[in-house]
Image: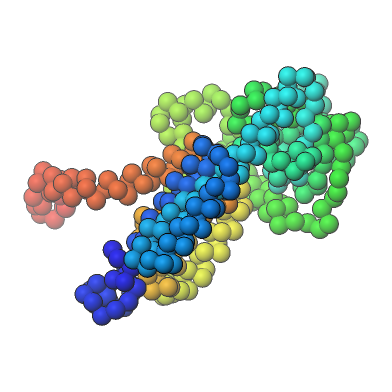
Length: 395
């Protein structure tokens, strides 16, 4: 669909669309260019300044030749995202070099980090001291190099009677990494002897408030049920911090339904659809529904820690709800591509995350293949269905 047919004029496209303007299809191309650029920058790297130069050239072509504007803007998106991906890839290479050097010399790795909102106490056993475990926020080397693409977990073992770490505190930790250098998760064993408190949070942060609310909701879910039932309820609604036992996970894996134990786009989609339906029954219009649903979905996403699949579904729901408010026709592929571009703009390392890739590719396959496979399937079901007799509907 061309740009002029989509945004104005008295042509047939505008008349057929009625009061709403059709979905702006060139946006799909720009977002796909952003995805391709992030992949090129992350996997190829290269001199980061090369990509902004190409982006500037593409924008210059778009300015001089209006007919080539959509293609030039797509190329500009590709180059800009490639520059960001290449920059993150360079940081990842520097951190991998520092990590390999520390492991080769059996020396501690210094990291500046902030205590994450998932801080919890872990009981090791009857005769072993408890420790506190958390995910580090914004971990960097002392020179500012971020710890990409690792997720840094810290086991903080404080002596009895000493205060535990608090959410939002900034620490400098010198500890030997546990596990392989190429592992996705990097675990550090820290204690007050190899850790220095840099600063306390000046006031309760948003993450700390969300963590407190999450803990309060988890305690409410545990009332009146067994610990095992509470763990499943907390996992499927809030994303529990405690892991489910391996034996029970294997049962779900053998049944092919292990995905229900993690908060995914399906959970967010079901919640959004039900709330949208209920608000529609209450007589609220599209703008009122969007004004209520978007903050609720955003708050829930922050509450559960913003996993990639849930972030994708929340962004898609936001784009879908904003469409009628902006006099645009909602389009699932446009929402999917725009959510991918926004997530990659925030964190280009998601292009190498298997879970995020599977989430986006699976939904893209559903959206692309359903229009091709559904009509013949429905025709076959209608042909095979027995005629209705006496009142029961054919299945």
